[in-house]
Length: 623
Image (cartoon, rainbow, N blue to C red; front, top):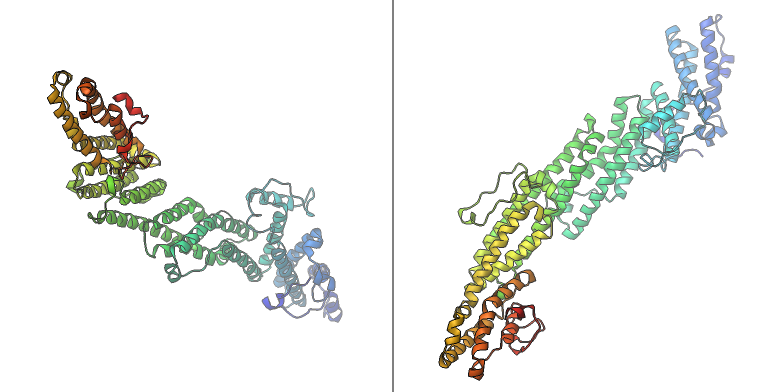
C-alpha cells in the first residue's frame, strides 16, 4: 500500500520522461565518442531498472515493496544506482553540460525517491523486529535470505551482523542488512540528509514511546516536590525498573542498530543516535536529581540508596552507550544525579544523628524499664542501612571518622579493623549511630526515680540493639568483638539491677551453720524480716518488664540461684518449729520469681503473681 504522508516529508523533481523518450526527441549535432556511447548504454540500463519501480508511472510500484517482493532484484537495483552514480561522475569529467548528465540526474532523483519509500517501509513494517528486545541476545539461529548464494557478498555481511549483534533473530537481521544497504546507497549518492531524517523520525518515536511505557514521566521539580511520599516512592520504584530496561535494552540496542545502519559514517551515526535518544535519556537521568531536591526524611534515604546503587551498577554501560562527544551532557546528567544522591544520603544521615541527639530527655519513658520507641526506631533504621553497606561504603569512603565528645569515649568501641570489616567506613558510621543512641538512653535512664529500674532499662534497650545486630548484616559489619563487649555491658547492667532491686533479700541470709544454730525467737525474727523484704521486692518489681527471653531467663535464674538454696536451708531447719511464721514454701518463691518481668504485676497467664501456689518451672532445681 502507498505510504501516507511521504509526500509531505520530502520535495522531489517533477515526473521525468524516460531515457528512451528523451533520446528520440534529441538531435545530436555529432556522432558520440566511443566513451560517451558506453556511458549512454549504462544510463539506458539504469533507466530500465529505475523506471520499472517508479511510483509516478507504475501502479505496481506504488503498491509493492521492492525489498519484500524480490530481494534479488532489490540487490540489482542498488547495484544499478551505484553504477549510475559512477556514470554521473564520469560524465561530469567529460562534459558537465551534457544532456546525458541531466538525464542521469533525473533518474537518480527517481531512484532516491524509491529508496526513501523502501527505507521508510522497512523501518515502519519491521518495528516488531527492530524493537530493543529483538536487537539483543535471543537464540542462535541460522540466517537465510534471498541473497544467499555461494558467491553472494551478503553472506559475509550476514555473518558480520550475526557476530556484532548477539544472536539476533533472523527477521531483525535481514531488516538491519537491508536498511544498511539502502543507507549506504543513499549516502554515497548524496542523499544522506533525507535518509537520516526518515530514520530519526521513526526511531525517535519508538524510543520516546518506550520510555513512556516504562513509566518515566516528564515531571518538573515543582511537581515532584508537591507529591505525597507514597506516590513518589512508587515513581522511584518505576524509575529503578525503567533504568535497567532502558540501559540494558532500549538505549543499548538503539546504539547497536544505529551503529550498524550508519556504519559507513561515524559522524552520521553519532548525530542520529544523539537525536533519537538525548531527550529520553535526559529525562530518565534527571529524575533522581529532582527527587533529592525535595524535602528529606529518614525513610527517603533507602530509595536514594537504591537509585545511587542502580546508577553505580549501570554506569559502565551508560558511559559506553553515550560515549559520543555530542552526548556528554547525558553522561554529565547521570553523574550529577549520582553525586546529588550521594550528597542526599550524607545529609539524611547527619540529620538523623542530630534528631537522636536532640530527642528530649524528659519524654515519656516506657513503663517497667522496657524498650524505648527511640531504640526501636533507631535500630530499625540502622538495620536497614546495613543492607546497603556497599553503596554506603562508596559514599562514606572519604569521610573522616566522627569526632567523639569526651563523655562518649567510654561508650565507643571501634568495630572491626580494616582487614576484617567488609566496609570499614560503614562499620564506623553505624557503630557511631548506636553510640549516639546509647548516650541518649543513658540520659533518659536517669529520669527513673528507681535506680534499679534505670539499669534494667539500659539492659533491655542494649539487649534489643544486639538482637537487631545479630539478625542482619550488622553482625558482619560490627563483628563478634563488638557484640561481645556490649554483651558484657548488658551483664553489668543486669548485675547492678539485681544488687539494687534484690540486695536486701539476698543479704538477709547467713551461712548454714549460723542458720542451724539460730534460736526459735531468732528464727521468728528472721522469717518476719525476710517475708517483708521479699514481698516488698516482689511487689516493687512486679511492674518491671524484660521482653527478650534471652535476657529475662538469665536474670530470673541468677536471682533464684542467690535466694533459693539458702532459703531452702532455713525452711528445712525451722518450718516445724515456727508454723505460721514460715509464709513461703520454696515452691512459692519459685512461682513468684518465675512470674516476674512480664509487666503490670501479672503472670504470663494474666493472673496476679501472688495468687499462684504452684507451677512447673526449670528454676525449681535451684531450690
